Image (cartoon, rainbow, N blue to C red; front, side):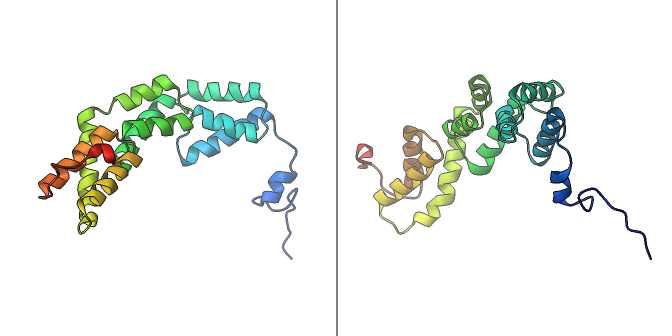
Length: 189
């Protein structure tokens, strides 16, 4: 008969075993939590601080661990903001205003947000708006001109584009398609 090894609290990979072990040092727990969260995706310092607070890690220990992670480059809010802007602008077509709003909710410092969002220039933003309108334009064919304008401009507004830019881009796209836009009353929209 094979001899069975007894593990305290059950098998070595059971979640019950983890819960029944004596509590770890709070600093070790904090390190483990941060490393686990950073394994899946980059996070901001605030996101990690919030996670540590939820796990009841004392604030002074959390600050110490987070500072150490920043020192060694595991947490870098500036790099996070830059990558976020690049990814969300090219992937989702979000404008600077929407990107700044998202970064604020993630706890990124205002100066870092301004720097990251500032990398997008007005021409780049307008080009992205034109591409978004071109993709959506086909699905609005058959609708009356005013409804098309509202749908296309609304789509850009939801992505954070300023009203003037949105209306200019949509008007140009409709004109290129042969739609008459000369008498559109943009103030009535």
